[in-house]
Amino acid sequence: MLPKLLSAGMQNFKTEVSSFRAALAQAPAPRLRWDVLGVRRQTHKFFNYLLNEHISPARMAAAVFVGVVVGVTPFFGFHLPLCIGLSLLFRLNKIIVYTAANISIPPLAPLIMFCNYQVGFMLLNGRFSTLSMKEVEVHGFNLFWDLVLGSLVVGVIAGSIAATAVYIVMTLKARTKASAVPAQARFAEAAVALFHGFMPVSKFAAYFAKGKVLGDPVYFSLSEKVPGTASVLDVGGGQGLASLILAYQHGSGPQRTVIDWDRRKLTAGQVAAWNLDLDVEFAAADVHQETAFPRRDWVLCIDVLHYNPPAEQDLLIGKMAAAVAPGGTLVIRDMDGSRGWRTRLTVLQEKFSLWFSLTLATKIYPRAADETARALEAQGFKVEVQPCWKGTVFANVLFMAQKI
Ligand SMILES: C[S@@+](CC[C@H](N)C(=O)[O-])C[C@H]1O[C@@H](n2cnc3c(N)ncnc32)[C@H](O)[C@@H]1O
Image (cartoon, rainbow, N blue to C red; front, top):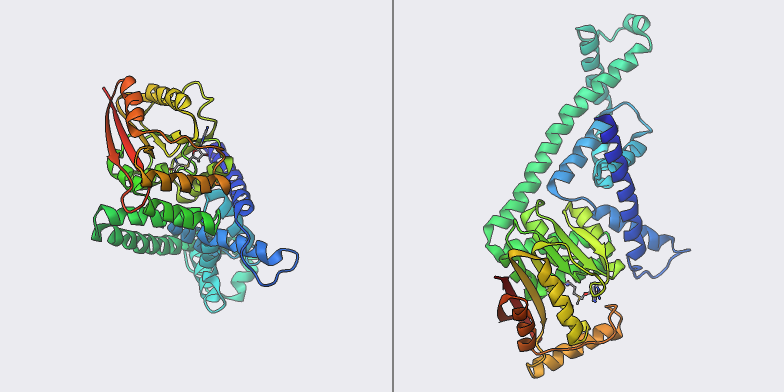
C-alpha cells in the first residue's frame, strides 16, 4: 500500500514538474514596457501558471484541506516548503494550498496552538492540561508531541470543514450555471473550462482553444453526437479540443486518444488534460505513415484530409475505416471543394495557416464532397453529408459515416 502510494506520488511529482516546464517554455512572452534579464517576463509566466492550475471544485477543496492541515501544524518556518511539496505530490494548486495554510496568521495562531495542545494532551493523558509550570517540568519536551498530535486532529477537522464548504460552493456554482440553460450553455461552460485548462500553457493557447470551440460549429456538433460512453480516436487531433470537450462533458471511462505529428500541440493538450484532470491520451505520429490505428467506437478526422493528395486521402480513409468498431461511426469534417466562393475563402484561410506555419503541412488539396463520400461508401459505410459551416463563411462539411 505505502510503496504504491509513494510511487503514485513520485509519478505525480514528475508529471507536475514536466508539465510546468512545458507550459513555461511554450507560454509566449507577455508584452512588458521594461524588464531586467527576462526576470519580469518569467515571473509573469510563472504566476499565470500557478493561478490557473488544478482549479476543478474537487481539486480546490483538496487544496484547502491540505493547506489547513499544514497551517495548523506547529512547524512554523516550514509551512511554505511543506505546502509546495504536498501540492506537487497530490497535484494541487500551490497558491490555494499556501493561502489556506495562512489560517495560522498572528491573531489566530495562539488560539490554534492552544486547541492543538489541549486536544493532544487530552488524547495522550486522558484530561485537559492545567497549563501550569509544574506540568511543563513533569512532561518536558513531550509537550511538543501533544502539540503535534493535537494539530493533526484539529487540522483534519478544520480542513474537512473548510474543504467541504469550498467543494459545496464551487460545485453549486458550476451546477447552477449548467442547469440554468440547455446544451449550448453547458457546452459554453466546457469551453470556459478548456480556457482555464490551457491557461497554464499560455494566454494565446487559452483564448485560441475557447475561441475555436465556440466559433467552429463542429465541436458543438460532436459534443451532441458522440455518446458519452463511446471510445474515441481523434486522427490529426492537434491539441485534442474535441476529445477534451467530450472528456469534460462525460467524464473518464471510455478511451479517448488523440494522434498528431505536431508535438507542440500535443504537449499543450496534455497540459490542459492534466490540469483539468481529464482522461485523454496523446500520441505523436504521422497519421499517413501509421500502418494501423487502434480500434474505437468513434473515429474523428477534423480538417486533416485536405493536406494530402486524393490518393493518400483514400489510404487514410481506409485505415480509419478499419479502426471503426462494428456499429461505430467515422466522422470526417473537411472543406468541400465544389462550393464556389465558400471554397475559395476556405482555401485562402488555409493558405494563411500554411504561410504563418500554424500547421506543419505544406500544401492543400481541396476535394469535392461527392468524391470523399464515394471513398467512404467504398469502405462499406452509409454516409450522410451535412453542411458544417454555420455562422462562418467556410465550405466545411461533415461526413457522418456509419459502419454497416
Ligand atoms: C486544422 S488542424 C485540426 C486539428 C484538430 N483536428 C481540431 O479539430 O482541432 C489539422 C491537424 O492535422 C494535423 N496533421 C496534418 N497532417 C498530419 C499528419 N500527416 N500526421 C499527423 N497529424 C497531421 C496537424 O498537425 C494539425 O494539428
